[in-house]
Length: 210
Image 1 (cartoon, rainbow, N blue to C red):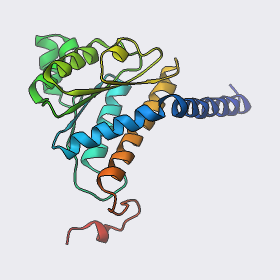
Image 2: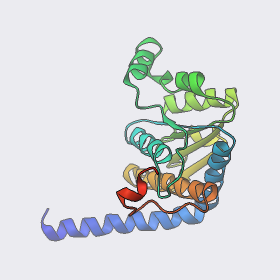
Image 3: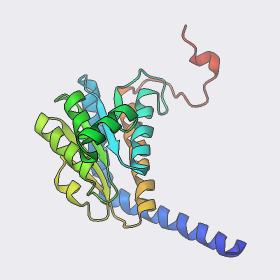
Image 4: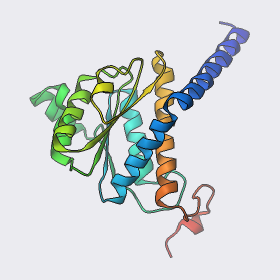
């Protein structure tokens, strides 16, 4: 591949991603707002957010949990969020003793409460461990949000709120999933902390406690 071919590929990929986001806004915009409000209501009532997924979706789960516990844009209190993909002792113990399909459902069983929200991410919508976690969450009375792609798979029929990216390319789906997650963070902050100042660009002196 020469430079011109590579540049054409880059331009085409970015255009494809931009067009997909426009399609996502048309088809899923209201669902994204509904999901963000569901998260805000959970946090306002003292609940917590439980994120999980495999591979790139595991990275997204960790990324989004960090945005809530740390901050997204605004200077505000920490918000309770857990990624079920970070504790290697739990993952390997449950995987070894019960099977990999249960690495998330056991954590839902241990840590989930009825006022929490479980957010599972699966590009195919058919990851067995994500589906089992949703089954456990629903049984325990948690609300559930699923991010998927393609036709939504079994996930689309297993959660309170499915958000299905209208694409079949895994990379493009993942790009939209993190964009949706960022919108969740932004909308939650705007709803819960309307008067708080923006943290981006604040000096270290400003960030130090008084």
